[in-house]
Image 1 (spheres, rainbow, N blue to C red):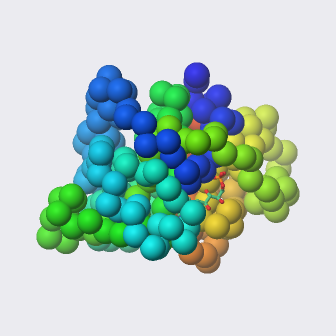
Image 2: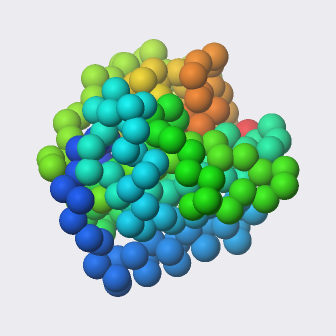
Length: 221
Ligand SMILES: Cc1cc2nc3c(=O)[nH]c(=O)nc-3n(C[C@H](O)[C@H](O)[C@H](O)COP(=O)(O)O)c2cc1C
């Protein structure tokens, strides 16, 4: 499965089978986590066989069940932390999809298990990503129209439309899709509007846009 195919196949999944993830898949995910950490300076952690974060009432209210693995998005506090978590976390989400797993970004419905996480001074746990073999593969979300999330200055090229379609397939908190992509002169500006976790969403949708549009076709402005 290509990354583009993974973008189409991915949907949030909250109920898992509790089935073990084979070692070679864990190794591939761990390698990607380390690569993302090197590139971003984040302190992302992969937790395998750690069921406690999704065992309490909070996870139950969010309809989570059978979650025994997750990715913890952790990094130094600062203005760019949320967006970075979105941008790099979604790379791991899409790799997980390519490897046959299901996922769900989780900002609220989990308990922070302090003895399972390494959180250094000045760092913060931004959110988790549940990971495993889902009971189903989830369903497609309702989506805003292309017009609602774009501002154009001149005729947009085909790659811009491909990028937007890819961004509209991305997960966003409460499916809010509070983002705008603006096009001018082969440059793109992406902005988030006010909303719950909307800076994390911005990082996620920027990664989807890059995959759909082709990074070589444009510059972020
Ligand atoms: C930053 C972020 C935080 C989220 N937090 C939660 C959460 O706390 N609980 C939950 O059930 N889903 C959560 N979600 C999942 C969204 O509800 C889901 O992505 C959205 O409804 C779109 O559906 P899809 O992922 O199936 O495309 C979150 C998603 C994102 C991107």
